[in-house]
Image (cartoon, rainbow, N blue to C red; front, side):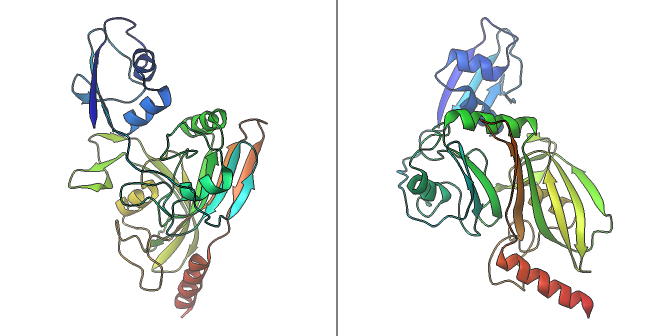
Length: 305
């Protein structure tokens, strides 16, 4: 981790992402990601990328050093929902990590994309080429990757302005009695476990998840969830917060006794975006995976007894 420091001596009143992009070698997109990760501080306090600079502000940025990982193309089969010269939409399987990280540098979606696409947006660097958003290892479903920087910036902007919509199917524990709901609760790092997120007012960001009950099984509920924000583990954290953790979620709940596969029963079934070149609204859907359908069959049989 390399610490960089600046003092605002002129051009105060600018957003900090713009100020830093004009006064450092960091790109504005990189700065926004660093702010999202809580790595930009002004006068000792973490700030968002929208913070407006003031005269004599002391800015400190913790810039992670490049990870010594060589990401190699791998001939891994992909379930491609759509592809053109700008974007590729994948139905990600359970157990696949989206991008390499220390200890995981093979078998990822990025490894597969590098083999299949040959060219990907370079905005997120060598470790995450083309990746504009992510879904967890054990979450299945729709994810879009970008093939050029123009497309990457356009889709990232849609995510920021909430014009790109992501909807999930989830099986959660217990019976949710309300047909519809909105969970509006800020999410930040769990101070007791940095690998987990939690609902907290400290060093957190706003987070909103809408849900609609699709089917009830008595001891479990099938939900259609829509993200209004895109925080790490958002649906999983919010469901735990209201007392209905996602079934199979070993991090925020407990394993599912009915399933052979590990991890949460959470599927990104629909992705809606505006095509970066044509301006056309596009909707992509990924069918429920086999493990998800099997669990629903079991729950329906139990509920009918």
